[in-house]
Length: 243
Image 1 (cartoon, rainbow, N blue to C red):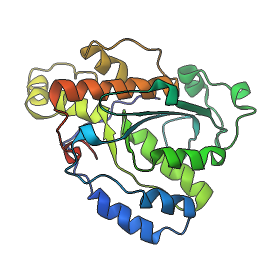
Image 2 (image 1 turned 180 degrees about the horizontal axis):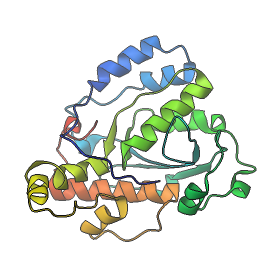
Image 3 (image 1 turned 60 degrees about the vertical axis):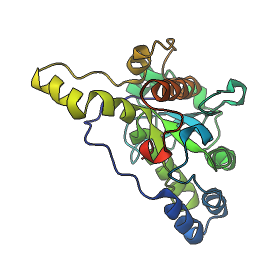
Image 4 (image 1 turned 90 degrees about the vertical axis):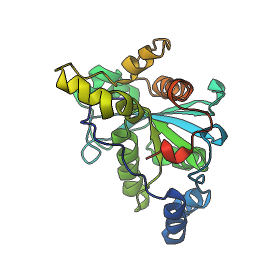
């Protein structure tokens, strides 16, 4: 994942996701997407401890979903109590846009690595199957959600929308907004880093080499578990976490 530090504002208001899914299931003409939406989404009042989760991370050729492409996907199904790492998935996929030297420097995925990689469409059915009925967890929703929307629209003629728990946004609530953020700005302090590695360090989680999709997905899953244990509760309603 290429980690950004976006300007953080007040806690975002999430759509009523069950109603959105019901509407999209009716409107979707593409069978893969129709099945995805028909699998549904949890009721907003459901405690996070009862949710099936899917940590997701993409490596990309750049930062703009409109002008860059996905090159690697990492997925880790998990729950609040358990991360079965053996079920993790990682795929290289051939980008529609050329690699940029800057992105190669970050994720170390080269042209030769991608020479035999398939198009994303090869993995699309499995990807949507893993996402169906699960709540995705990412670290900065400005990558995974828009990149997947653009990629699916290019292949199926229809984009995708889905809720996520954004662990970066949860850290922003603690350190960039509200009283803590106001006091830091008032005192002229440097904003607290909410990058994945720095966020994990605050919870004494182990260091992992960054920018490998499956590893970053695992790191995000562990971070969410730590965030819930430290600042929330297993009984926290999912509506208080997703966007």
